[in-house]
Image (cartoon, rainbow, N blue to C red):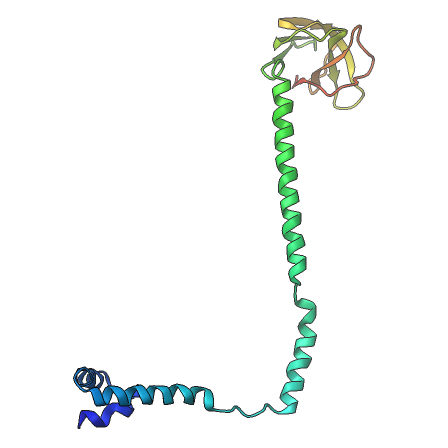
Length: 203
């Protein structure tokens, strides 16, 4: 086939790969075909925008609008997403503040964070506590030990000022499943704990 007759087919991308390759070799040497191809390319592009689509039936348009109205409740407005993102940012900032507050609290309690307490209890229920690493109690304060049974109120059992190492024999019988705890109280001790325990251990 004469390559000049393939210009229209090439413009519409209707040639097979071998024919297209042969025509492109001819096109590189034929000015007339290049000009004709340029005109056909413009016409082909115009055809893509020249077709007028038929108007959709009224029934179809109505059904589409009805379906869209029914689904409207499932659409999440962009504004709501923006507020959700802002809420997440506030929550992240709050968590960061909690972490910072915890770090500050730990740094302020470095004097007690390495303290430890052990309890030894004999067969008769008598017990002795041994506390190490606890700094001296603040001025006007004392450390108070408590026996906390599984049922019932905490019972005060010992007062001590703290220091490098403290050993105290606890009066009375200590139940097997009780917990021994230490709080910081006013000097002279109290009948009921007023602070959270700084040390605790089961017997």
